[in-house]
Length: 207
Image (cartoon, rainbow, N blue to C red; front, side, top):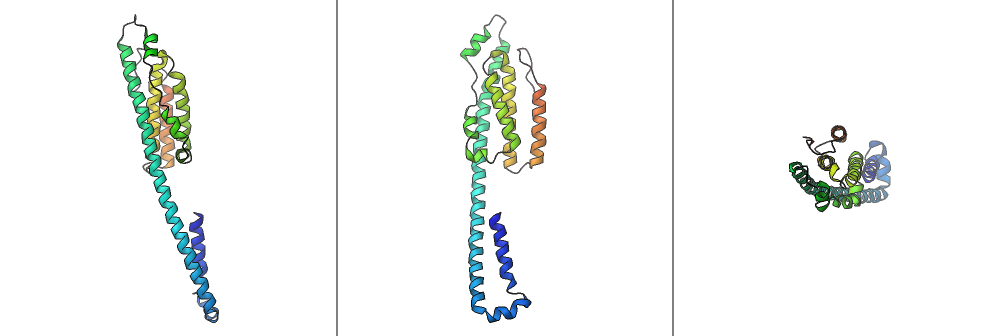
């Protein structure tokens, strides 16, 4: 943005030479004026090149970030699929089954790769504030809930919501949502999440 402003200023300064009011002065100092105009043209060219370079770098960075966010979605999805299948399996067992022991022998995975993605500078400096806050809070919840079988239905819902938060952020980064739309949809998503508090078996998972 700074380079763009400087470019406009230099073009404006150069344009003064061609105003009728300064025509005679320009003729008397033709050599100096030509030198200044050449210098301005060179500087403008350099600034335009820098602008183009920065824009290209920014676009490349955004593409890389979207790839990382999609990788995060896949990571959460793997954890979600396994956890949901485990929950459904536990629902089918009779009451004599030692679910606690079975759970600890088949604990669902945490999407730990997500933490590695979030600390990358390319992600941490570009991700929206609302998405970052929601991802961090849900990740903390997931780490607490994964330890006990009784919390598995809630853990599944945390992963489901976490995946949706990341998908909303991808849509935002792609330009499919503006900041206001992202905020509204994120708020609705988290409100719906907070309504679900089932933590025992024989409860239905949320749609």
